[in-house]
Length: 182
Image (cartoon, rainbow, N blue to C red; front, side, top):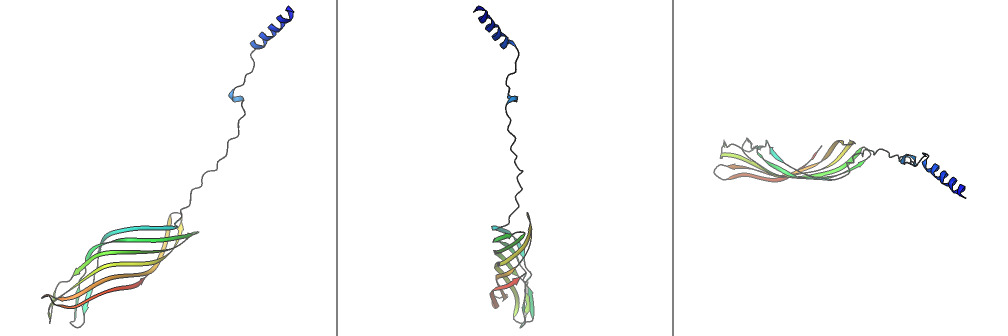
């Protein structure tokens, strides 16, 4: 029995003393990496509402003519101009369809130099109160590039007068003008 115990003990010592192979992280199973496709760059879409504003200065070159007196007066003016615009675009493929409108307030005012007439010294004055447009838009897109044309109507509220220097007024006109623009 002693011999059996001695043999088992020697076998155990020999088994633990012999360098053996142990498990390491490199021996673990490795999962294949998950393939992720590169993210596509989004194509720009022009569809949607837009709102904007503008501000600046403007000038005009208005000539008022009175054929009864045989005179023409240039009452060109300058002034502030500013307003709001809004519109909607709908993109279908590379084509764009839209509508836009704006409203502009102005402080255009102009007065001519007085000129002599048989009635006395006469001068002209004019002013513009507002301008507005409404237009359809058709365009072609290429990502963030938009080339378009538009056609629509425009209207303006203006007034003009021919007056005598002594305070009398010869003629006063006030109107809202409309027209088409391309």
